[in-house]
Image (cartoon, rainbow, N blue to C red; front, side):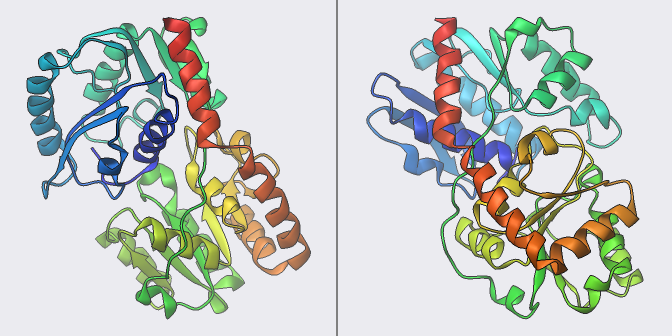
Length: 354
């Protein structure tokens, strides 16, 4: 369903770390992929990877194709102890003793008008939660939302925070070099990400005279986004990089003056941790799981208030004493989240079921 994103990173790192445990044998049944992550490189003596590259873009067509291909292969594979679907997608022909599901967020429930086929998505989730022997929630806030919308016993749920890895060094894409000092925005720009509010706050602040904005990922800017940027007179201030490699993203984080995360809702939120781990000041919303994850390692604002966002952005960009303190605390917070720790806790859930 995606070529890049937090859920892809989660399963890539989970499998990569599971290969370090001699007693664990893992099979990845991915079908046709276009991921920026090198899932093929995970193949080894204890990790069997079934996938091939395709030019078919993410979405229903590729989803349907992979359903057919993966269900055709599944009967020939042995019975597993644990079946862990990657995204609320339970192949009926995979044989297993137990099913573990990861619950990421409640975007479909809180914003039912936002994604296409939200009702179908909620139906699929409800069915899979009923099938699951255990449900892993990526944050305490994620578990709270899950229990709010679904009738699930609390004891069936487990909170396992995600990890963060130091992104590799690389070079900033040439297009971004012309931007000079910049604020970094990473990820999709769907409504709950609150990108428009960030653009308006930037336009209303004194930052527009000293900084640019670099947007990474999420595809090209939409016509509506371009119109907003033009309306605010920021055409020369916003650089879009629709897709970036891990090396490019690592460089963009490290060279950013600050990272901005204006989201109205997150189940976990990896980008702020990636920024903190890169030594960059993170300026983030004070809602949903974000304070739980970022703790005291970021500068916070109310995402529903332009004034609050402007104040926090200006402080985070101009107050050098604050910037130094936040960098130090941010690095300490990011160090708490490791993929090895996430994998060990996930493996503990598996073992308890067996």
